[in-house]
Amino acid sequence: MVSEKMAVELNKQLNFEIYSAYVYASMSSWLKSKDLAGFSNWMNVQVREEMDHAMRFYEFLHDSGASVEFDTVPKPKTEWADVNEVFEDTLAHERAVTSRIGKLIDLALEEKDHATNAALQWFISEQVEEESGVSAILKQVKRVNDFPNMLFMLDRELGQRAYTPPATSGA
Ligand code: FEO
Image (cartoon, rainbow, N blue to C red):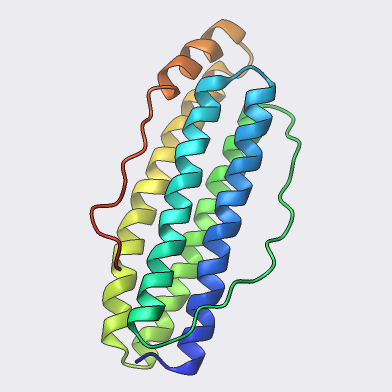
């Protein structure tokens, strides 16, 4: 069982993961409209991963006897100045997610809720990978942002990213 307070906070994060998927879907669409199919593909994989994260919270809440409450998803940004801004926003978003997961762990520790703490450790490891992956792309984007030919080469590279379904559905 998780506490009522923890269930509320986990539900907020479930909904934030869905919002993350929405943010990346909007970025994917903008990138596609700029004929950057590879960047758009990369974001589409991100969308699917964010929905997996949401469903991981969904499973954990159900397994813990708590209810799941879906909320209104805020409208995401729809326009960016360039690819650099898209990835600046992506990194800022992932840092915000990391901070939120950290606060959930703080609460789990405060409540001596070892099961939730253990489930959240997966997310902390995932955030290290997410931030590192996005930082690496942002560095490359900064180098090539003003050179269309090089941007298209990076676009081709990011077109190779493939979605890998999670090994297990539970958290
Ligand atoms: Fe679900 Fe990208 O954090």
